[in-house]
Image 1 (tube, rainbow, N blue to C red):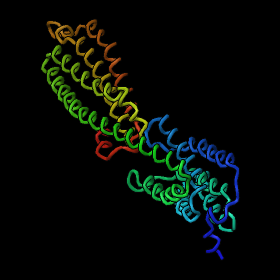
Image 2: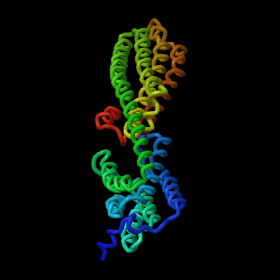
Image 3: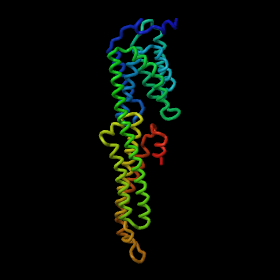
Length: 328
């Protein structure tokens, strides 16, 4: 008997549910999803958008999908739920799947609730395996439902979905190309900055303060160029794209922090004149030394802030090689 109940489809028996109720559930799911900790972009606005979109889409799409496709999604949601709220949502979604099987007529609002609860649990799932594995598993669990929903949707809805997919794919593709080109340029500039920095240290040790200050200034310019690149209007939107966002943000933030420190270091080197500090007879001119207190204090403060900013960077979604570079 259970088999016959699960075989009921929308076309053979569906109890009419007010459209307003379906959209109300989807909207509530979107709002609740915003409070999840999911951070696919590392950008507050981007994370809010993608979380809300996930909550709304899963709630709305489940309504049109065949009921057997609800089970993989709800099952994974209940399995990966992390925390009391997520676990309650996951178990609730799974209970909704089984409850739907006891109705001869399909109740669309149950599908909306199953999708909404599954979205909340998946967005609040715990981390396991390699970076991105939880997302891969969640997507795989939702694919059967999404495909079924697409096939059962109206022709107009399918056209909208296809259009959105094409536009989104083109935008992401273009941003990916821009980000890759800027990243390659950034790699060369970082190498130049490091080279200038090493030369500046050698010049300072040799007593060539002016040359050292010039070299540090050149390093600052290279780093500043990287930060400028990743803040250009045509590239900044990449920060709102999952996976691209964290890499673009980290490159931009690290280069800006490095440029600020290098600028302060250049000011110190300009003010640092060993001949003025050590006067004939091997004595130290305390007044000349005192003039270094302010620029040195500014440098120390800038360095501390830079270290704090880098320590706070979210490296969860970074490629392993990028994460290693950030740690270095």
